Length: 263
Image (tube, rainbow, N blue to C red; front, side, top):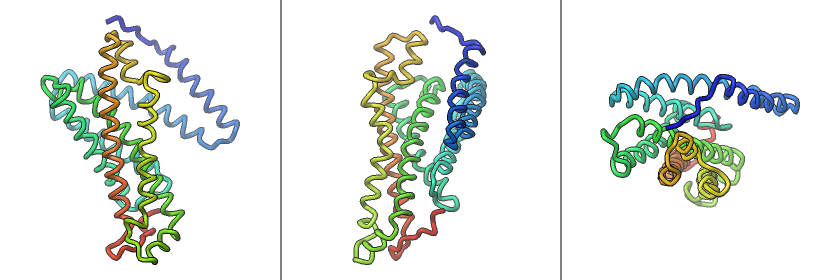
């Protein structure tokens, strides 16, 4: 495969573009300049570290190393779900809700893809298992984060409406049904948008990477279709699980709305 190597100068040019955007945001006083620069720095450090770790994991191809790396990825994703919400569940619930939802969805879909669809030998071959899990976790994280943020924010803002519906005799499930439905819809928007414009407006990341690495375009397309469908399934399962459990957590056994479980 004829892969064109990128030099430090090439990456510096790309980084300069991010710095220009950060300066414009600082000039306009948008308030997220620091977040952008921190995110860019984390991207460099985390991806460089991941590259070194994957080199070791790929060489060893050991199930225990792969399981350890997968667990670290899951825990990091769970933390990101928690910290990205304006209103979050207090205590360990904010972390456990996102983490458990991604474990149920992303891990199950990844195992299905490895054991039934792709079928590498061995099934946990890191060249397949780690990228698949990473893409599923990343996209499921986005859906769950958006869904939970919509849920907690709307419940906080519309608590008087929910209490009014409860006072009229509605069950907790009916009282929050509109918010629950909208939150799931919000969580699914990114993947629906991505599938709608794939191949028409955008070339998805995995397909682009394979083509740049020399994979025949049609083979890259087949893998991208597989990934998009797996991501859609994982995002849907994870978002629905998180929202349904989150809704129940907002009410006690006497079906009273408990805003003290949010902060």
